[in-house]
Image (cartoon, rainbow, N blue to C red; front, side, top):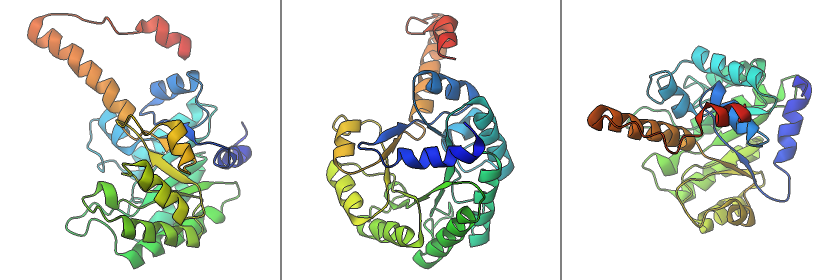
Length: 268
């Protein structure tokens, strides 16, 4: 797909009858596997990528992440959106710079969050959060190609279980011109319905570990996009640790559940 078309194609996915799943690869290999499984778009995972290069979430640099994004874009024909954390800086101009760098890497979109990472004020003050959102939106709108900007309110996964403030922030981002809204940490369908009914833009929901939160039920609740964050990364690494631990502690080599190179190779 041509670069000038990929953002428009990604945008159109958010306006279907039901939510689409945008899984989160952590490297080129996992991106190719997910494309081979039939997914129509991909999103990076900041935590998964960080672990894949031996760092903690929040410990990567903008240059490292943009290089990673460029690798995924070059390896896949699918639209790729990037988790770009807080935009690699606290100022509104940092968020804007990061959006421009994302577009230059060939991404179809990206997300910027309101989590500063600095205790005790880990969530940006409302006024600054909106200023940062406005700067990111202005940068996205100045681009020559369509670019889908997601703005995230992080309260619910950052020890601030305040749904009212989360909705207030999402509504402000909505009014400022965000394309997609995202509040990771919505744990029930009622919470999803409440958020979706409070805003006018497509809502992304993070899923994993809940049996009643399915593509069908979340779609019915009003969401348009579903991501998994680092969930696939932790599953892959968890299985590796399980097998490796048995090798180290018991001398047992248990690859019973592995698809082997042949199975993986077919998907690539």
